[in-house]
Length: 103
Image 1 (cartoon, rainbow, N blue to C red):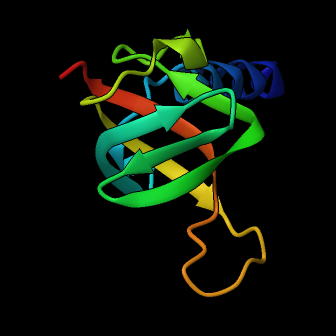
Image 2: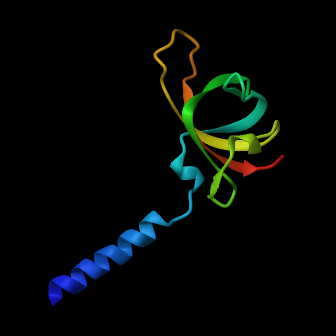
């Protein structure tokens, strides 16, 4: 019986952790979108050009999944990148981002 309650408590705590909204602390970088070309697959954030990974995840201000098409010039975002193994000046590819403000 004790192990049942231990398992139940672990599941409840795990569920709380998994449903916690995203925060800016979950992301390594932040900035303002200066330009974007979704067809070409890149964003310019604070004068730096970043590729978009093929499976980039986008989150709205409330932490819900959003479409890439929701992005607009002037939005403040926070994001994570991975290296693409490029040369000097390579900024990497954005793998996930969250919208902080619409303008």
